[in-house]
Amino acid sequence: MGSVIRWSIPMRFRSRLRSRIILAFLVFGTGLTATFAGITLVMREWLEEELIESTLQREVDRFVEFKRDNPDPNAPFVFSTDIKINVFSRRTFASVPFEWRDFQSGVYEISEYRDGAMRTFKLAVRKADDLWAFLRYDITDQRRTRDALVWGLVFVVLGFAAASLAIAFWLSSRVLRPVTDLAARVRGFERGKQPPPLAPQFAEDEVGELAAALDDYARRLNELVVRDREFNADVSHELRTPLAVIRGATELLLAQDGLPDKTRERVRRIDRAARQSTELTQALLLLSRSERAAPTDGETSDVAQVVEQVIDTHRPQLGNKPVEVHVERVEPALVDAPSSVLAVALGNLVGNAFKYTPAGRVEVRIEAHRVQVVDTGPGIAAHEAPSLFERGMRGEGATGGGAGLGLAIVRRLCDLYGWRVSLAPREGGGAVATLEFGAG
Image 1 (tube, rainbow, N blue to C red):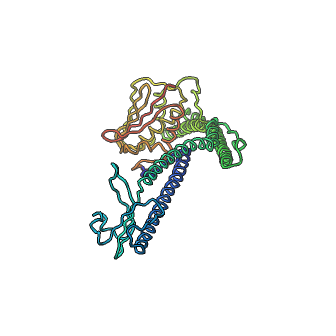
Image 2: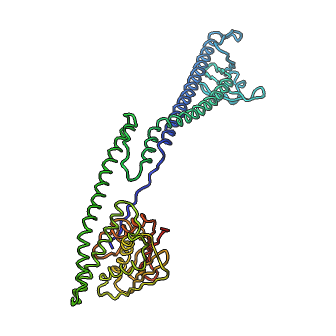
Image 3: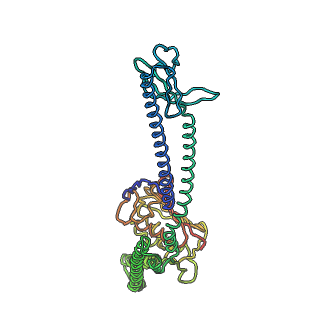
């Protein structure tokens, strides 16, 4: 049973197309608004700083030059803006506030506690060899205005984000409406019928192209299904006649007296093979049509009788192997299904048990609603049991020929009739195959 190869497919993040559209619109709207607000704050801060600092630097320089030209302390100097001034010379060093003494020429931002509140100032410093000048400008109101602007822009950004989200929900529903309409039409297709064309129902846009592609795919798929069904039906129909001829000939041969025992056994093998082929063609025809059929004789199928036929058909697989076959009838079991379908399902399970049991015992246990086939062969691994019902899958350690289709056919028949089939390792070695029947 060749090894089963499992490919590990990395999981990718998946989200609905509408969610991605909403998220993209929200991120774009919020990001654009936040960027504009940030640029506004930066530009305002930069312009304000440049304006205040350049003005203060210019005023302090003018004041120093004026004092040099007009040494009289009472000489009036008019500032171009509302600036508080403190003038100190080296001779009045003690009058300079301690925290200002280390400042070099330039403009600084300081905070002082005045009039019962903390206030913020810009301090312009001009130190010359003969004169020190300090100009102080109150910017507390500007800072308050800046803080108010920041909070205002925050609320504006949040408002635009909420608006972007609302618009995104509305636009996504409008944009995706043709797609959802297309999906609804595809889901409304009736099984087994040629679907109506989709392209005429949509505009000549991307969704219309998708609808046209789906129409073309549906047409090609329908043609393939029709050819497959016709082929299966033709093959099944054409095989019935030669199989019936073979079975008729074997019945006549077996009815003859004086037929050698070896020849009689060979004819019986031919008859079993013909019966098995007939059952298989009938089951495959039902699968190709995806339709259930009641028993051809109008009665339910006796599971025990079918089991006996299946064991008789597959017994040649045992050959000379020391394998004991035992059938245990716990309860009578009747199934509302053709004996041919039941024979194909049970035949694969019993045939596998005979094939892969070199020595020991094969037991078929019949209960009211299920059949168990237990063997003492090499068994199967628990992790590979579900995969053995897939087409082409064979278990580890499988020997001999085989395409790995038998159990896949059993699974399809079970899906068609509402049955369940499973494989599991047997305690102590071997395998247990279980076929459970539904209500009908």
